[in-house]
Image 1 (cartoon, rainbow, N blue to C red):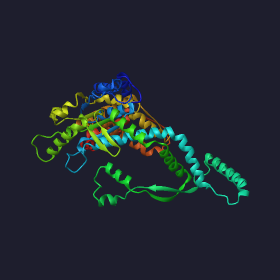
Image 2: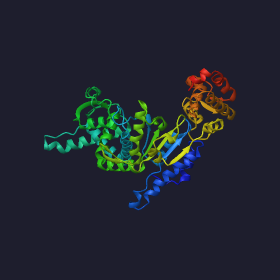
Image 3: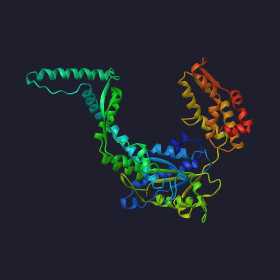
Length: 446
């Protein structure tokens, strides 16, 4: 982890983006801090300390996913969100649960590669520039030794003039011929051999084994610079080190968020889907307990990956999960339903509040958008009412009512003469009252 934040600091950071749900924030903050505490222990004891996995219980749209996602971003941890319903029991067609460990590893490797690329960027840019100059002015061999010195000096001066023009951006549209390697396997081949439904991991392995095809491409200097920069970066990066660090990052700091875990609750002795659902629970158990998963980058152990499960549990209870799986999620937090006052806070307090987002979007058109306090309160009331009348989707309702509210302004913004627009309570009622009064319409506006 990048910074050993205290639980109080983690909650304070989450408060900048997520309104309420303090119990859930405190639980994830403690879980993250415990990871840092574990790293301070002696090696023999460190391996014995398992993560305290969390199960979040609450209706849709109350912040379960957002808490986990923001948490991972805050501490610089690889984060994977999966839906439990996407997996099937071993032996059935579909993705097996071990693929989540492979996916998490790919995310971790991407983070490590990105960091490694930043570290070698300056050197890679220098080398890419030299390769680009070679394309613009290919090196030559002099046949007459008597004139070689003069010709070399002239060639060097020409190369430096080209370098100056490159730096000034005068050659961006000039075309050069670049040799590229293509390992992409046509989709038809995957289909023909039955790999089109396989894990992406196997497809990647297959592509890596394919011999690279060299081909010439005519590209602009601008595009060639980026292609060469990527190529030179790959040369400078130690791939083995990236793999080792990626595996360690995934194993020690990875977070897997398993959403809709309540949807895989089946019944013992059931038939059809129930059998597969129970099977997914059994397959998920070793992943959460700790197992070794084979990947094309080596073995990844899941012993210290933090699992956060979430579900509405509207038609079942957490106790309906198989007992062994329940035991692997010792921390349970309930998230509360959001109401009018929560919506007011969501629209005004977070750093990325919807009102700020729309104001920033319309500012690109030269429109200064402002919301009166009464307008925000009216908007929150309407969103809460629509949730009560129909199926509640929590804070997600704000996205749809805001889009409906500002539809006309957004459509006409490029041509609008009046550059300052103030949203009043009366304007909110004029645009959204029909949604509340017409139940069919409220269902349509999800």
